[in-house]
Image (tube, rainbow, N blue to C red; front, side, top):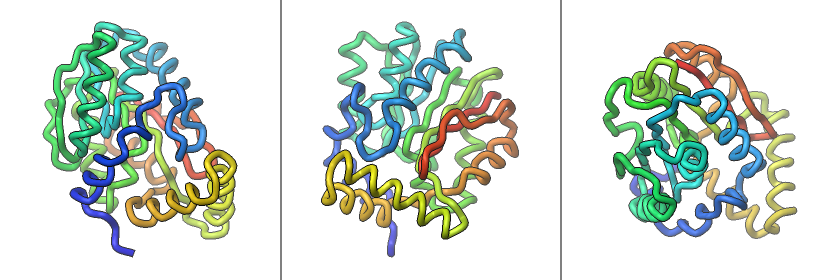
Length: 235
C-alpha cells in the first residue's frame, strides 16, 4: 500500500486535533498512553532537574509539552509539528498555563534546522514512525543529538515492530484487542487502516543501536508493551 505523503499527513492531522487534546485521557489509540505520560513527566523532572529549554518534536496538541511545563514552569518551549491546527491548539493550551514558547515551527523534523546544543530536553511521542527509511532515522537521530546540550536527554515513545512475523502477529492481535475493548471494532478498524496508510515503524533493537551509534549514552527502555516502546538517551 502507498504510504501517505507529508502533505497528506498534515491534512489528516489538521482534522484530528480534538482526539489529541486531552492531557488526562492521553491518546486512546496508543496502549499505555497515560502511564507513559506520567513516567516521562516524572523521569524528566528527576533526571534533568536543571532543564531550562525543551523541544517537543511532533508536539500535536501539546500534551507532552504541557507535562514538561507542569514540572518546569519557567522552561522555554520549542514546538515542532507538520500541522498548523495542532500547533495552534498547542500554543493556545500552553499560553493558557502561562508557559513560555520560544519558537513555534511548522514543518517536518526531517527538514527543520535546529541550532546545536540548544535544548536540555527533547521529546518525540508517536511521531518518528512516520520516517520512511533507515537513512531518515539516521539523519533525524543525528539532528536530535546535535541539538541537545551536553547532559541533555531525549525521550522517545512510539509504535514499533517485530521482525519475526510470528511475534508481530501475536502483538498485532493484542493491539487489536486493546482497541476493541476501549473504543470498539469500528475504531480498531480505522486505526489499523491508518497504520497501513501512514506508519512505517522500526524495531526496538534498531532504534536502540542507532541512538548508541550517533553518540547517546545511558540509553535504555523505560517502558514497552506490545507494539509500543519508550526509550531515552543522554548526551
